[in-house]
Image (cartoon, rainbow, N blue to C red; front, side, top):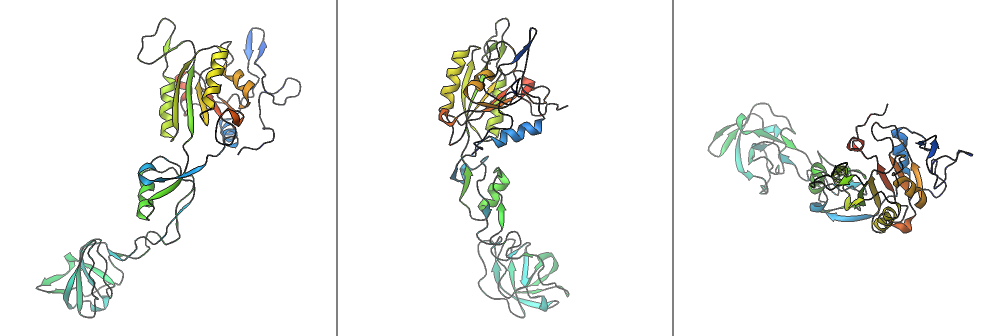
Length: 348
């Protein structure tokens, strides 16, 4: 939950006091509109976004549905991994004290089919990779290093206890933290969760994000632009980025550069979404209506950032009755050009 007190940069500075307030329109210098928002470093902008973005609730999901989700709690190992001593090679499980001797082979231990007997002095058990090392054995001799004669096997004259098998807990001990809260779950993370017996994992709920573009010059991709129009490419780049990050995205299409229709779309979207992402309408042009709308509905925390392109980047929070899960709803607005969407913009 974001702090309830005033934000450090809540809205543009007032000309008189230098303090933030809502609804302050861009100033004019002659015929040029000038942004009243300070130009801040990207790192500071990121901190403000994190500071004012509420944390969503949690849910438990099956591993099959966990790809891309964000872990809500540390995941602990309920038991050791491996849970039993297992051979790393094909060979024979023996006692190191029997080095150089001919040993009687008692049976075989393979993956999933352990040998239930005990290896005693003068005996051995054939073992395959992944098989349980039988009781009494303290090392495994590779099959390439023995001489087999009927039901006997002669082992090398020098053996080392502990060789060629995995001990209990070599990888993970019971109670170890195997994954940290905040980790995004990919193939490796899901694999370790499965290996330690977690059929379900606690994750953060997916953020519900409404996504729209603004601008009379935009036309849907695939349609033929008229003179002065361009394809709405930004929305699809943002959609891909949001889905890669794990968001549940609702597409709102293209909003016109008209104040009342734009306001209606934004308010209706935030009744069902945790966040709104827009492209366009946040610079200082006479048709840039998104930033003034956000100022009228809530609090703008970031009005400009040191990005080239992408300087008009805007981040605001709106009161929770408009939408969201228990906290202010954060709209995030990007500049209108495709290059302004790229995370690798210059910061000089």
